[in-house]
Image 1 (cartoon, rainbow, N blue to C red):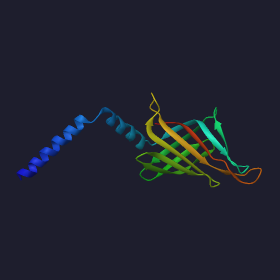
Image 2: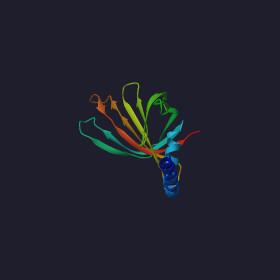
Image 3: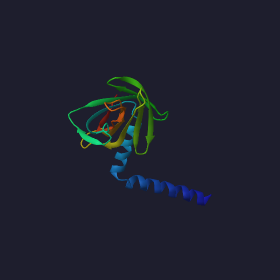
Image 4: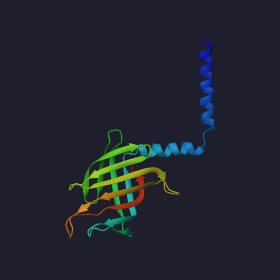
Length: 161
C-alpha cells in the first residue's frame, strides 16, 4: 500500500513539473491545432499559384497571379470524414481527412477530376488565418484531344462562424 501511495505522489509531482516547465509555445500550438480541428466551417482564399499545360505533350508551366478564388468548406465533421464544399459553381459533399499534419478535403467533380485542399495548423504571420494549399488535378478536352491541366494555389483559411 505504501509503495502505491508513493507512486501516485510521484506521478502527481511529475505531472505538475511537466505542466510548469512546458514552454508557452507548446500551449499555443495546442490551441492552434484545437481551433483548426474543431472548426465546422472554413472560408479559404487562394491568390498565388502555378499551372501546368500538357496539351502539346510537353509540360509548360506558368505562374498564376492577379486571380483570386474562394472555397467555403462547411458542415465539417472530421470524425465522420465529411464536409460540404460551397464554390463558385455550386455545392457538393466531399471527403475530409484529419491527420496530425492538417485537415484535408478531397472533391471529385462531376466529370471525375479531383481537387485536394489541405489546411495546415499553422498561421500566416501576424494573423489568425491558417496557411492552405489547393491542387486541381484536371484532365480537360482540348484542341489535340484530352490533356492534363493541373494547378496548385496557395492561400489562407479563416474559421467561419
